[in-house]
Image (cartoon, rainbow, N blue to C red; front, side, top):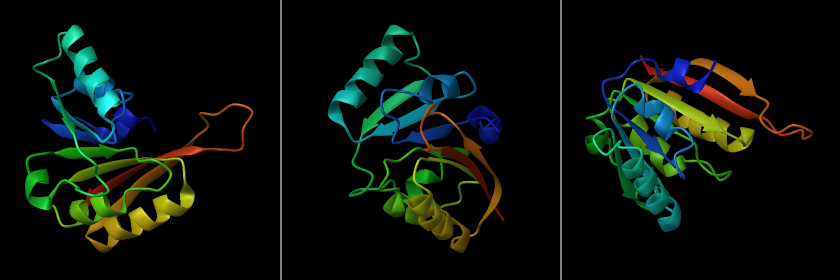
Length: 154
């Protein structure tokens, strides 16, 4: 399952831990994206790249440390889907806010099975169903795997 297949066709979504736009630009081909990244340099680069690609009307960028200041459930209500690809430490704080939100679909990308399991438990306990999960072998010559998981609101 690709990330785009997992996301489906939302009207508006958000990309958390967006980095320099690894998923943001592909997602922007489907609907407007609000990208959130904690690293100042990455957020600036993403904003600059979106402007150069004439995507200013489809990509907005916010700098925010999601571990210390996650997007609240109330603010999440404006999105049809959220994608998150956190560092190895996972997205516990943001997962708690997602679990309290009405967002109908969450797509998680993870490189750490332990923190993914913790974050998945938070989402499931908050009313999501793990609809699909697929391993992605992104790192040739390495035992490391990524995974893409789709959660849907029950």
